Length: 415
Image (cartoon, rainbow, N blue to C red):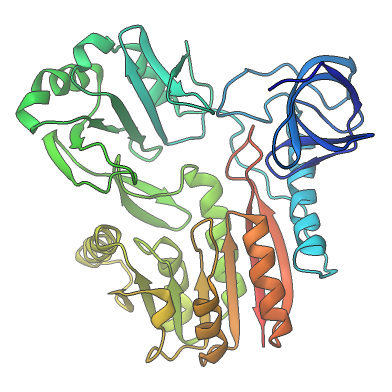
């Protein structure tokens, strides 16, 4: 339920890109506000901290710019320089508030591209056009253009007639900056033959391959089948080429991710054996390969491990490749018999659970490179490891997601 609009002074921006303000009833978090602004906001009452959205900006921050109003771009109304500063502050606050540590945080490494950087997109298919899923529901927010996705995806989308995508309910794309190619995945119930008309339409629009994914509660967990063309394309991430597809996990901003992977490899140093936990298709591990005699990738995702093995084999067949990288399916909480001097972790947003932190503590490693997409869970884990005797070294935010409040972190801890 919404109360009457409130007039609020915004103190700072907090994780999620929300402006923090206070009144006599306590804290209010306001979407669409910047530090130093005075705004009127529509605020909802409910359990927990009250939240609202800006109705009018009464005193404008010098960092405010005119940006697109999209659910995927929750900081597009701030200048890019300001966004980088806010993201550094998110990491600093998590470190002090959650980890209870005082340690220097580096300047945020900017993305090489501020717009049109995303190599992937997933949209609802409606008779009126493609749309984003609304933040608080399942209805579609239609759009005329998506300024975050690579131009190659935008060019395909501009040629599509949504009625010819029937019976798909959603569609996902993945593009390559390296080759300029785009692959698509239709999401809908049925057999591949039921989607041949939609597939032909996509191929005519410029994609090089179309797959079919059944709807599932967990994204793409019900299986993916090729309908026509290619299932994978090649992309560069830093110093390596990686196979990517429309449904498997890969970082959405290859240029920015490549900078972080190079830095992670530099922090890892040199030695006999490094293990990349949650290593997926091995993009980080392959950056470690020149510096270690052996590198092991550990992950639970068979699809990603298979892509990684194929990428390494392809490189070896071409006279390059990393012959010292091996891929192993397994859980990060079962490190056990893998002796290593250096561990690299790039976990999901939930971070490292207690069992994994215990395995790290009991491992032979004396250095841990921690790459994270969530300052809160990263800070929780770092705080616990420091209390177990580790020392936090370099902490550097990286911007993989310009125009949004998301931030990546590359950090290192030593025994």
